[in-house]
Image 1 (cartoon, rainbow, N blue to C red):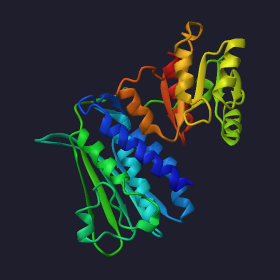
Image 2 (cartoon, helix red, strand yellow; image 1 turned 90 degrees about the vertical axis):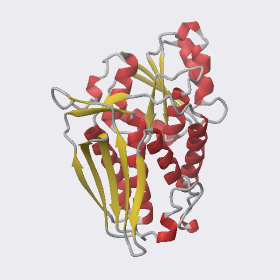
Image 3 (cartoon, rainbow, N blue to C red; image 1 turned 180 degrees about the vertical axis):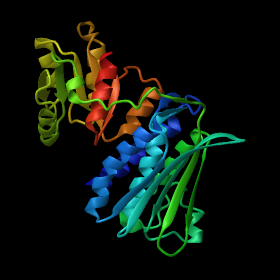
Image 4 (cartoon, rainbow, N blue to C red; image 1 turned 90 degrees about the horizontal axis):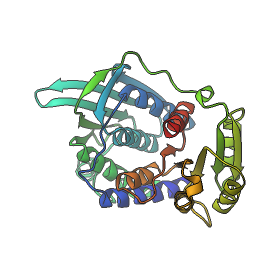
Amino acid sequence: INIISNNITDILSLSKLEASNKGNIVLEYFSPNRIFQELITLHENQAELKGLQLATEINVDPTLSILSNEFRVKQVASNFLSNAIKYTQKGKITFRASLSVTSNGQRLHLEVEDTGIGISEQDRRQVFRKYFTTNPNAGGIGLGLYITKIMVEELGGNIGVKSKSTPGSIFFAEIPYSDSRMEAHAQRKATLPDLPPGLRLLVVDDNPINILLMKQFFKGVGNVHTVNNGEDALTLMNDQPFDLVITDIHMPGMSGIELLEKIRSDKRFNTMKVLAISADMSTLKYAEETQAEAFFDGFIEKPFTESEIVKTILKALS
């Protein structure tokens, strides 16, 4: 099921990439150290399930922010890590990140080294091609690294792989960034107590396990209601006011996007904030960048950390 879900996500990501305006890259200041630490936390469980060691060499000042596209940088690093875990059966995966200033400008260097199956010289020439896979039995359809290559090139960077036919590969990317600045102090991670005490929250998700997890997660936070479809969500909104709606995207019947459109078309809900939650973050992000008619106020990618979801909620409410 996970393989099928990942393949569908890759296909949707690619279609959005190919349809998006290549010149419309949103630049923002963000902390590379923060997003890389969060990524490592999210991938540690995957590595542990396979008995793999996940090591890091992140040589980036925690108080430094760079000007680039946070989503693409994060996705490139995440794809490298996921690929390494997928094709490594035993041993170690090392994630490296560093910054440099050269005559050609400022660069962010990303590198993931594994002790996996290795890549032959012939396959190295094709590994970033669309639909290419070194192991058809692994369940992938050869889009992950192709999508990663597109994202790196959109940022003006370059991507490559160093490997031998013997075990082990190193995937790397060099991404330019426009500017950097030192923050006065490293930002404190947001936590649930930072949310408004009287927050009126509605969670919409057709998966009962997700509903249970969200109820447990937001336990003690304001006034939280849950429903399992868009129709019931609209009924509940007619009965009582909400400050924020968190909705899944892929639901039977009314989808999360259709729910958003109905909320946006009703003047009674014009102050209500709507967040989308999905494992298909790239599709949501590109929908935002290509100026969809009805905007979400933010996106939550599954799996998420407490800091990430609280930060997204606070940004939407501000």
